[in-house]
Length: 478
Image (cartoon, rainbow, N blue to C red; front, side, top):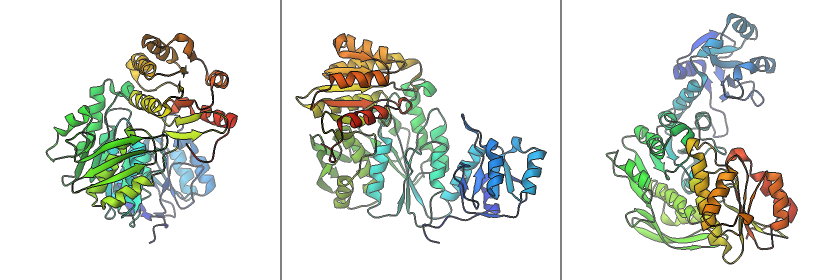
């Protein structure tokens, strides 16, 4: 079997993995993997009927029958006699399970153990996707490595990533996200990491976790599923992360700017297009130029270097991987326009920690030029939402912005926080994204630096696209 060929699944494999029951015996007992999307499925795949918040996969079974798909996994309570009769007549093999989301994870866990695959699993409040991308670049220097598509970090995305693995893959680099307690534990049970990494702990997803202590405990669930012979990598600069270090017997590998870190950086130099530093790992030092601005990205790079150290990748190859790193779209992308400002596209997502880091980076990059921030709501912060938005407003004021534009349900909280922080009310604009775009066109001057950031649900990237269309994008970033 080559890496390009799909992994074959027998009906016995599926039954063993899920504990399901055969409720319609079709002609097919062998499948080329799984799909959860009725619009994008091959006839030889098995369709898993996931019941989500918006769509219930069971409602698409008629489409699956029409397309000639030969296998279905569904919830047992949906397997009524009328449906089973239709499936039998269509020669579709049907397996019933208690819960299809659980079954998806069980199939992924089964896949994880089919061959000699090792797993790096990372979690944290900020920087997961960038760090995961850097780790993949480092690991790929010596190993065949699998990494998720986009932001596949939840109870659906992580299993779908594992189901893409092949015998040729030596490592899978997985990002574990969560909205509530128990999700990291379940994801850890599915992937059973050989290397576990926590980037940082901050006020994110408070709506489901209640407090920063709750976030810490939820992130700490990854420790419960780490292999007894595994390696643990922790951020030495984050006090909440270091509290978790006391919960495990094994000695963690520490990264950060702290002198106590095993993997550390010094002599940082930040510019509009890169940040350079001296990288130290046990046994060696080397100069690294990371082609993405922001000192907080040094922490992400150190985490990736720590994984490289665990994988015994030579220091010069870690340097090469980090030096050729391609930034994730919407993560601190510096875009130079032809007729106007520098744009900082950091629209991938937002929480208080990442917004503050972005504002700090804006302040360091703009130097003597004007700085403008366009901020949308930070979502899933629960009862603390107004206070945390006000806190970000205060931080924005302290960063020396010339103008602040805010949109969303908590725009007024950011505005009040900025005014309390000493920013003139006349320099703050609240409104819709369309209103902000119109106001920006009247405000922006050549060589301004404009940061655009907000949670994924705010779709702040539409403002980036509008500004690029207005001012034109240079081929090379500045």
